[in-house]
Length: 446
Picture: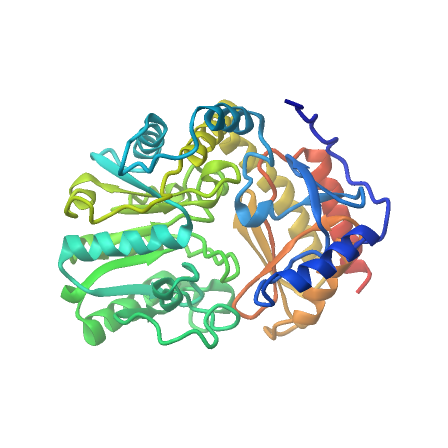
């Protein structure tokens, strides 16, 4: 077996982006794959390690997207690769609900141990964030014997039918795909940058609006669960104001509502905590995880109070591929990396470099209306200078410039005007600073 060496962690351009081989391969992509699939950067990747993507033309691109927050521990992380190789040589599948195996149990034990809360917890493994959200809702409804689900403006929870109903943004996620699942109710999100009211009382005002809507339009006694992303992802990395998540959690507890934290994008060291709710010591009844859990392999989890997780009848939960042994092996390698390499501390260090650089840019360029986020999950919102009007044109120009120089960054936001930064938490200081220098060039070029 040939073991590939790690790629040097440096940006290198040998052709234009895209190069001739990528252009040729992308023509085949157009012919072979659905036109409904998007594409962030027009290259074909051949190899990747840590925070560098190598395309088939030989260009080395700095990855500030981590496959949308997935390769937190770096691409092809050593412990992940070693565990997957060992597992694939042992067996590739039995289905946990047919013939169980230890790695599934060990991942669940780790989730029960690492997630917030000292109470007895149990976990379930599935394939994706959307599938995890669906199962969390199923369990909450079964446990409470209630139907209504409360979600938030600007939220994103997935692309299945139920999670599309829960997701806020119509285009591109929902347009033309209805009708959607019923009994999903949307309430205001305290989006501080765009909040019309008094920002000093934003938490109290938002809670007043939310509780009024729940009690008058839904009936709190009908609500099975309130689900929220501790920092909203696709919505534009919207960070709730201090006190909001604790108030929401308390309201849920007071009314017998299951409080679910959707930590699909925020979990596993990304925000400078193992889980983002730890910032304010919030303890959810259930927590949904995916993305960074398994170093790039498809895996997701639902972890919750044991009495909630055990409320479903035998065989009411499951799925053929959920908790596949290869993905579980990868997860154990990823979790080991996070803990042994102290990636929580590393994410906070990255956050300082990233945040300081973005705030310096905002002071220099008035089209950067807001800088927000925590740790290795931060964003800038672009507006027309002196207004709140979204500046999608500037965002697209910055993205295109960075791509041309070998830096991959991603977009987000309800108004399609947010640039988000999700570097692997193992990215070197030098590589991150190089990418940020290209970002500054991009703004200077506008």
